[in-house]
Length: 330
Image (cartoon, rainbow, N blue to C red):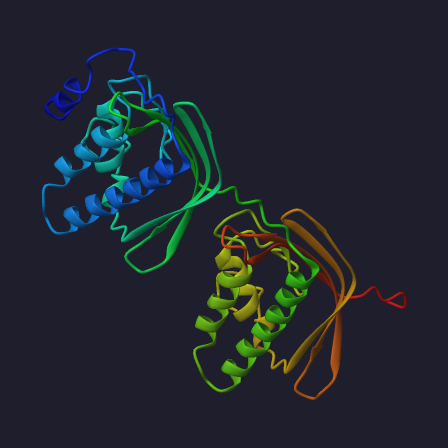
């Protein structure tokens, strides 16, 4: 990309630029921010239209950044391997994926239709300015993506604002913590799932498919080890796989002792928690649940459930211990 660097050379008449003695102003910084956003949109629209987006991007970096005048500190948003872009060509690669840096996918060619800045403040001191805040990028679907920034600005020898520091990062997202309300909702969903499997079986429908959806949605087999000790098992007490759990619920034949707990005609399920405790993404509940059979009688069963949050923030079961209450007369 050396051909795009040639334009910089004519800007360098002295390694120590002679800045405007009047100093940088907030108004100039606001104008530079507007120009930066307009430049990103122009690159994106030129790319979408099949135009020479590379030249547009090269002009964007040459015009707005201080490469060739002074050292530039640039830490783009979407980088991991080469975090810092101290040269013109490395910066250009970030914006339009020239191939100079392998990890770059081209931030400025992602179809952005608008960019707006919200400064928390703008500071100026002589020829130097700094700004911090959030900027918002409108994607092709019309949604805004918020990104955090700090920019540093200097005046070049012609009195134009140039970027000499650009730090951009995605906002911090704290790890979600599971709540008692979420666990209670998951318990309701579990009970409704058992009733749905039973009613589908009674109606002659595809109850196995309903049971698959029940296990897939509520249990964590696809993301973590699951500890499952069902109620009515003797030979294969522990069900560590999806297929073993499914067999317990609807007697698929994977485990020969299974008669299908969820196809016994249950018409209602209710939970009575002795207590629920939570710690970060982990929750635990213990108590009794009651299954209403086709005759309208309730069957009490003891349980302990462990819950985790998946990456989408949905509650998933990773521990399920169920047992018949102790009978001292037996």
